[in-house]
Image 1: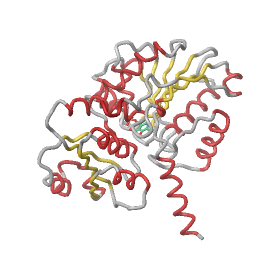
Image 2: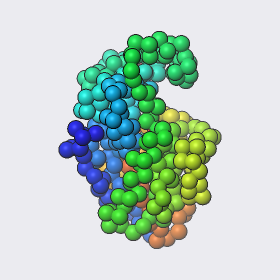
Image 3: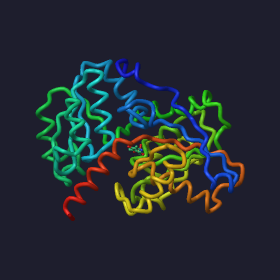
Image 4: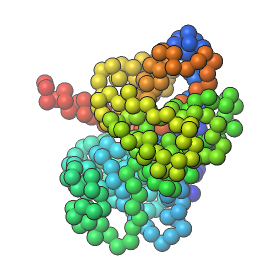
Length: 311
Ligand SMILES: Cc1ncc(COP(=O)(O)O)c(C=O)c1O
């Protein structure tokens, strides 16, 4: 990661959020802006990739292969990180490859080789024939799991908890963050210095997240975790006007942009829970902004395409 280091902002900055709702309910809400860590390798991607890529630099392996959707934050960040540190990157993409999609065209610019596979093959990953054929093209490689979540990702994420000492804020009663594969939540739980309850707000419809997180963090700090599943907005990468209006209202009041796949949903959920008195007055909450802002270009791209079709 040495070639990334000069551009990295760590510890990521923390700000207090000022909203009428917070005054009314007497809640102290802070936000840790991991989205500002690096222009391209930001948010939980930096945290999750850190030890995966450091580990690779200690081997002779020069190619990293990973999986992702066409607008994936992970694919985007991994292509940029590999480009900067001199590794070959290969992305196995779910569904078709649209050359004009801003995420994939960025990945191409970063030198990532892209291969599309059917949705069925994507689900089966390395055991699918379609995927095996792609893997045969490369002689020596390391696979990094979808979303970058694996046993190494938790070490990078756990460092967030140690950074809180430098952030000059009261110890949070709760840390709130969005959840996809559960790797980021597992990393926070992995920290031996964790003092807060973790509220992990799912961005997708699933019933298994708690157990998936537990298997990634080996049940460490199990009693501190609550997974909230009421704010997925009908499923992964789905959105509606309520969500988009919330995001733009939040940004106009705080100057903090949120993405529509993860942080928009989690912050919406958090504000809704505050409004419903889920937290006692004087609770200190730290919201972890996990990045994903590159996805907003994808959102505009999809909206423009839809407008074009309907006009
Ligand atoms: C911006 C962003 N936030 C949150 C998440 C969810 O993180 P995890 O998959 O580790 O639960 C992801 C996906 O990795 C993401 O890209």
